[in-house]
Amino acid sequence: MSPVIVALDFPSCSEALALAEQLDPTLCRVKVGKELFTRSGPQILKDLHRLGLDVFLDLKFHDIPNTCAQAVLAAADQGVWMVNVHASGGRRMMEAARERLQQHRLNTRLIAVTVLTSMEQADLAEVGLDIPPQEQVKRLAMLTQECGLDGVVCSAQEASMLTDLLGAEFLKVTPGIRPAQSVADDQRRVMTPTMAMTAGSTHLVMGRPITRADNPQQALEQVIAELQVA
Ligand SMILES: O=C(O)c1cc(=O)[nH]c(=O)n1[C@@H]1O[C@H](COP(=O)(O)O)[C@@H](O)[C@H]1O
Image (cartoon, rainbow, N blue to C red; front, side, top):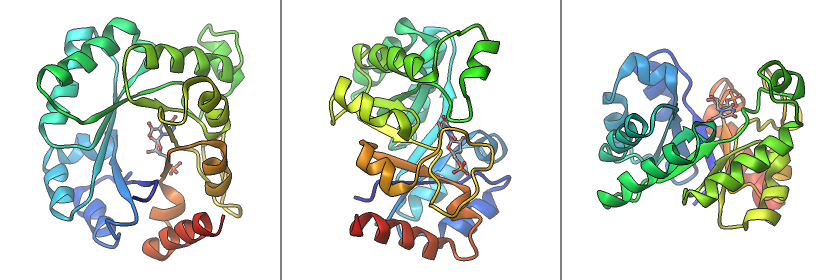
């Protein structure tokens, strides 16, 4: 299966589906985030499943343990392939979410966001974290593994460090992926698809470089071809 997850960051169901219909489900999975889900509700999950696409529901839950666990359960009940929480929600929150999935025998992948790829050291300092992003990523990823989750969302720049520390099987889902000639947009800790896979990413989250391309399926095929050559 392809490592590419296309981020469907669109304001409406119709725009997201128009893009999703152009994508080959054997070449990618898709990600539904806050904007699209808040506007379209769970119907978008049904529509994407109907197209044969695996869905990563990226709502980055962060709440008291029971509320977070129930939200994760609600996502898994709708058949999504992957769901995420913020690792900074802490041990009890992550363990509650993982246990709730186990109690219900649901095999939805559960991962945790470490430090957002839009953040650099100055952003962390402003919220009281006077350490380099890599150190905070390391701390949160170790905690995530201890809590029994399947992996983390991190920057590809931290993937090799996490592979050494936590093993190749532990998922490293990496946004901030930009093909060589692309603009970074609001991303800060970025890498190309090939460099990210070489560094140990297990999944590449790509939004605008694919969804805003003149021909999204062609842009996706180019990424896959680049990865195959590498
Ligand atoms: O959890 C995420 O998916 C995520 C975490 C993170 O640290 N950085 C990050 O960019 N994302 C998401 O990944 C996608 C990146 O989109 P592009 O920057 O357009 O490729 C967006 O949907 C973000 O919400």
